[in-house]
Length: 152
Figure 1 (cartoon, helix red, strand yellow):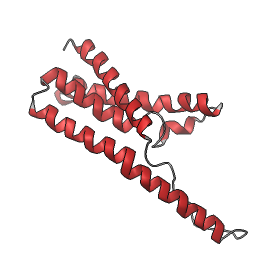
Figure 2 (figure 1 turned 90 degrees about the vertical axis):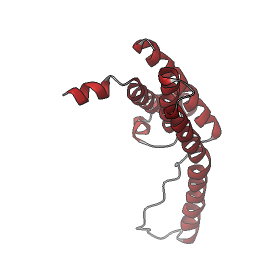
Figure 3 (figure 1 turned 45 degrees about the vertical axis):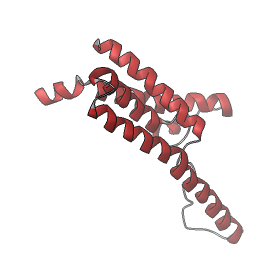
Figure 4 (figure 1 turned 60 degrees about the vertical axis):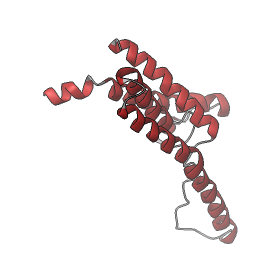
């Protein structure tokens, strides 16, 4: 039982969970302002505004920085993860999503009028730079709240 207590009293873990859940639950709300309709399934999908991946890793890194010092090895490792995840979200996965759009369009054009049994590729894989930036800002915000709650 001690391990569960340790796990749930770790500010970095609390910050990670809160920022991820908040980002995921903000997606249908943000989508409503742009599309004028609620799509609650967005809570369970990747991509979209804000980037939950960026929010999660940023909140962990900021929490570790405030808690253990921005000169600590733990913060250095967490910061490296922030760079990798945010780059991947806004570049690699975004490009994969664009490729999926093109492939899906090719399939539609090639098989127009015919029944296609193959499932189309998922087109929303990554994030725009704006979605990543909002995720980073959300992560910083959540981290500051969690650090304050833990008195660090």
